[in-house]
Length: 178
Image (cartoon, rainbow, N blue to C red; front, side, top):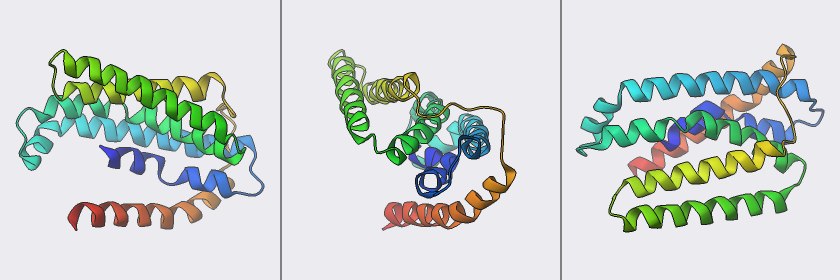
């Protein structure tokens, strides 16, 4: 499930942080492409949840996978805003966001675990953390999407993100197979 977000964001966050002459319209097309990809990955994950359960050999995993996969588009939306917060060196806000999300998610998970819901405590933790992050970042956005796009800027981003994405995928595979 971690892989979903990495694939959907595709490395555009790093490109946003590093592009020297970034303007708001440069971000729109990467954002919409990432959101579309995130929705496609969510749908494929939901469709293949049974196969994932069989592959992992964990009975009862499919409903958990389906429930958590729904978070992929929300996580992708957070990643873009987070990259812009970093670009604008708003690290204190990001730190408070992380602290708040982690604290509230952890408390919610403890309550659900104490109530005896097992693995669903982790699902609740992910939901609470994701939605606290989403609210924190999008209620005070650094950037808001518009329909004005720059295809040439997207091509420039693509040249940057392809190696970043490749490195991420290689790192993911190596970490899981070692």
